[in-house]
Length: 193
Image 1 (cartoon, rainbow, N blue to C red):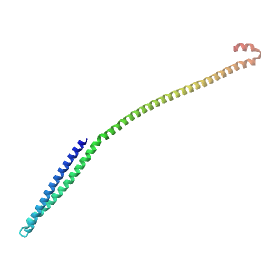
Image 2 (spheres, rainbow, N blue to C red):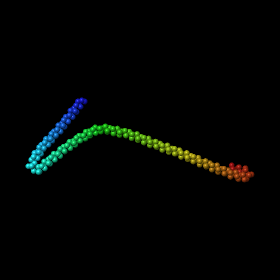
Image 3 (spheres, one colour):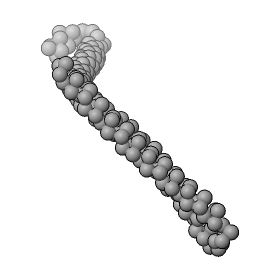
């Protein structure tokens, strides 16, 4: 473990030293170029009286181009550092993605189990509703049957009353003519039977 750590430190130091060395080379090159061009500029300014105006314009263009190039170099370095930061950030994000995917997969599994439970609950509720409908229909059927039985019983009683009433009226009719005849009771009794 210690060997791996020291190897990583050595590699890191070498990379850092190479980077610093490259930066120093660029810096020295730019300083040399500025010194050289500054010398040329001083030489041209000292000869300014003998030079024509078009040469001064070329010198100004070269100075402007140099400044623009330095700005581009500075901007390029900033973009490069930003690029390195983005690469590090994206590497960290990429390293965390498997963990996030595991969490999401676990959530999907939990939701699927809950969904199965809800489906079972819905099926049970549907069965209970159907059973309640059947029970309700049976109760209605029994109530209708009792109502019909009561209705038939009531109609039967009315029919029996009408029969008894008719029989009593017939009996009364038969008995009343016999009572008028007073003497012929024996004949009425024979007719009634």
